[in-house]
Image (cartoon, rainbow, N blue to C red; front, top):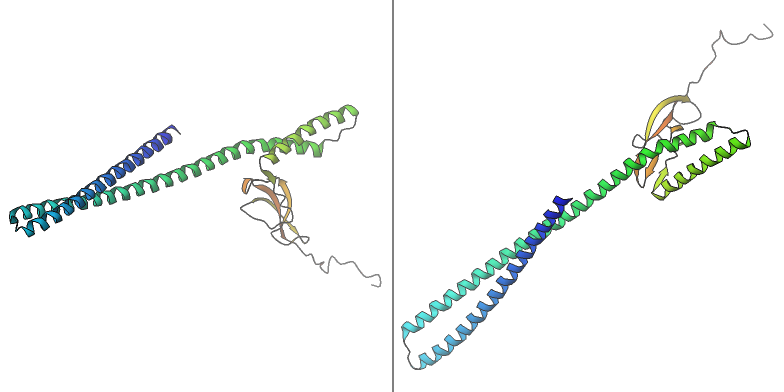
Length: 238
C-alpha cells in the first residue's frame, strides 16, 4: 500500500507539472502572438509611411525578417503546447486506469479476506446444527443447556446473514458443478437423473459468489426390476 501511495503521489506531481508547463506555454504563446500582432501593426504603419515617402528598402526587408522569426517562434510554441497537452492527456488517462485498477484489486482482496474469515466459521455452524439434530435433551437441566448453546447458534447465524451469507438449499435443483460437489450418486425413480436429492454438507453464498460448495447426493437412473420366471410365485391352480 505504501508503494501504491508513492506511485500515486508521483503520478499526481507529474500531472501537476505538465499542467503548469502547459499553462506557461499557453501564456508565452499568447504573449508572443500579441507582440507579433503589435509588430505587424507597427510595420504596416511604417510601411504605409515609408511607402508614401519612398522609404529605405533595406529597413523593410529587416522588418519582414523579424516578423517571419516571430511567426516561427509562435508556431513552435503552439506545437510545443499541443505536444504537452497530448502528454498531459495520456498521463491523466494512465493515472485514471491505475486508480480504477487499484480500487478493483483492493475490493477483490477485501472480498477474499472476508471469504476466508467467514469460511473458517462455517464448520462451527455445522457442529451446532449436528448437535441440534442429534442431541435430544430429556431433563430440565439438559434442556437449559441445549437452549443456551442454540441461542449462541442463532446469534452466529444472524451475524452471518448481516454480512451477506446465505444458504444454497440445493435439494430438488439440477446438479451444478459450479455450486455443488457430488459425493454420492443414488439410483432412484423418484427424481430425474442429475437432480440433487440430499445435501450432506450445506453450501453457502457470500453475496453472489460461492462461499462454500454444497456437498450433495445426486440422483442416478433408477433400476426397474422385472421378476424372472424362476422368482415368480406358483399359481394356486398349478
